[in-house]
Length: 183
Image 1 (spheres, helix red, strand yellow):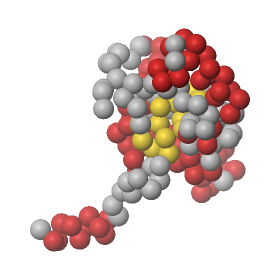
Image 2 (cartoon, rainbow, N blue to C red; image 1 turned 90 degrees about the horizontal axis):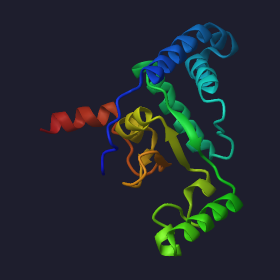
Image 3 (cartoon, rainbow, N blue to C red; image 1 turned 90 degrees about the vertical axis):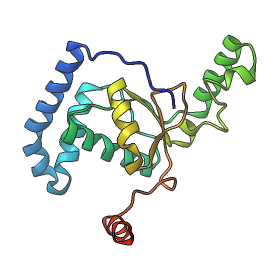
Image 4 (cartoon, rainbow, N blue to C red; image 1 turned 45 degrees about the vertical axis):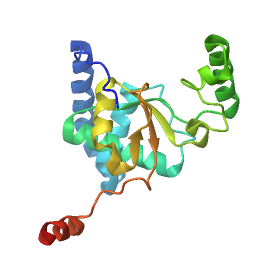
């Protein structure tokens, strides 16, 4: 796939990332009181909710939402990387409006399909597509997302990921051991 163009991380974005991670650390004790088993996930969600207040996870399939939440929790806690959601589930009427606008702009339905799919074909309408930000978060997700069934699909959209849990299941520790012993 084409690599997204490299843009240096702006000092403001670096500051937002540091502040969000620090906020998650401060929220961890409260999250632990609320739910000890999911404390890291809750603190991450709360901190990212403050960083990306307009994001909406409603409408995503349960599996897609769980995969995205798990991936961005790992990204924040293990790598200090923020991943926000720009667009997830889309109502069929909204998707049709986006497609119609792109048809007018591009001149034909075939040309429009390069950038926007009609509702019957859009994974956004099915609740399993995620448009993410920032670029660094998308890069992290491209590198690590397969563990969660999240894959970048289109060369021309660095931000677009889809949940496909059956595509590539990472090997278990035992499968890795068996492969090493088979050599």
